[in-house]
Length: 281
Image 1: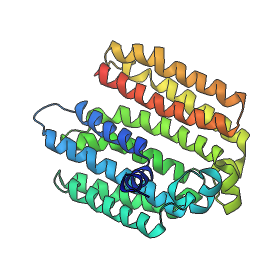
Image 2 (image 1 turned 120 degrees about the horizontal axis):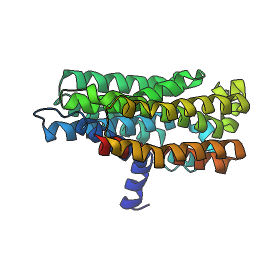
Image 3 (image 1 turned 90 degrees about the vertical axis):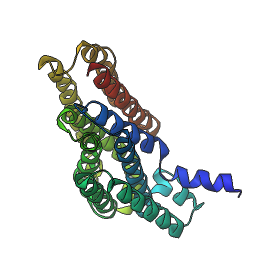
Image 4 (image 1 turned 180 degrees about the vertical axis):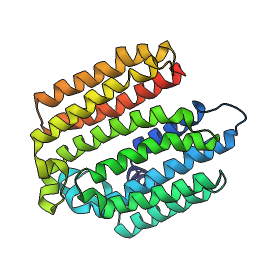
């Protein structure tokens, strides 16, 4: 295996799409919170430290999910056996230390948040994901926290709360979809996820409730005159129609291929939600 292939494996195990999204989320969170003097240097440090934290979190998750991933995600490096557990641990520690080190140059609050996030991601992989809903809520909370973290880098978090709530809901829904998708492997290794414990029908109903709540929430910033008309237009013409179409597909069929599509659809809608907030600022 050549050097380029090895580098690709080490990048792939971090799930680079999620890492890049986190990087952009922190920058958007910072930009929408700017009210006075700010440091581009600190914004970039925040984005990088958050990206490294997420990358490390994905690695530790894959380390503890090696067995179910052989069924649910056989393409992942540890499940395929193309990277050793020892090397995965080394990369995990390097990324975590980089994240903590970079956050220390921002401020004490940023430093504390990276420490907290790293601990929560570790606990999620080891224990929390085995508890129905608690693991899902943890991941959704950390995703929303990325916006708050961006605000902290510019010493103002007020503008980050609405996007943080939006991110929490859309990622909570996505986590439940992923659990539905992974139910076969989770059953074999005894993971007590929400779909496994309460069934697919109950999961669909709960996801429907969360999605309708999210759609209703998109009206709040416009009604309260928090964002400009650009937010409302994009939310009504793109974000909410995607959520409605998502529900239609959810009830159509629950095949693995369809659930993967639904998960990717939510990830795409996260981008449009960010764009709506950014343009409506």
